[in-house]
Image 1 (tube, one colour):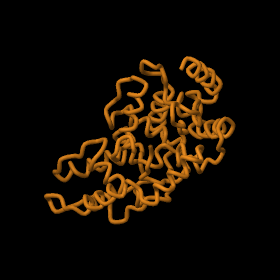
Image 2 (cartoon, helix red, strand yellow):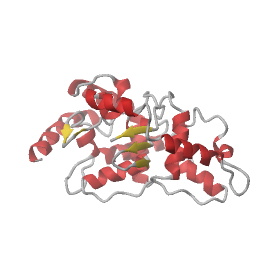
Image 3 (cartoon, one colour):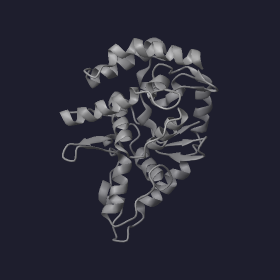
Image 4 (cartoon, helix red, strand yellow):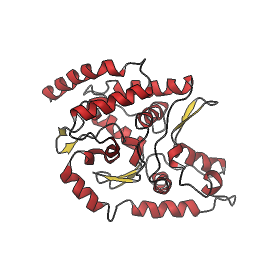
Length: 277
């Protein structure tokens, strides 16, 4: 473990000059793409939507077999059922999102200039419920993951287009960027330590996935969870793994992180919901 942390520290120092606070999002994105191309076994940017399966051929083969009868199908059925279910006032999710949701997933996350906040898909799902007098779903799993999966599935093949266009939006991007590279927890590790500097490397029995493409396939069914979960559920789990206290789902910290990751993944295809170990 000490050798791994030492190696991570050296890699961090090597990449830090390319990822300064003054760099533009486009420069950050190109720096990450260049780093992965040089330091990992895959230089195919488009394939990063598949996480560790961009690297591990054996794991990819197993994953492709799983995708023939994906474990998230039950969640898709549940999501479709909830989508059609009428609220007490006679309306439904269609009244909030419209009938054609093929382009909905690609809109999120985005920066709301007036409210100066990041709007997520899950946040909008729950806002639709509360605006119509309904009780909101719990944030990390269950019904919210099912409805999110329904929307994600309809938007497969779309592209991530998130990009800050104002100074306020850029401030949120930089907040997420700071979170991504900040050390935390008893293990003193950052998101980047695992998903940039150690991407494609082994940690126990798993390859570490590249940071690019993380938002593309959520929500996901994880074998470890034996259920569906949102991106913010995964963020919390990662924080726990480094023995740090997680933030609440939909906190400003996690919304900023999601925004940062979406911006750095700009141009990648959406392929959610996904299945992971």
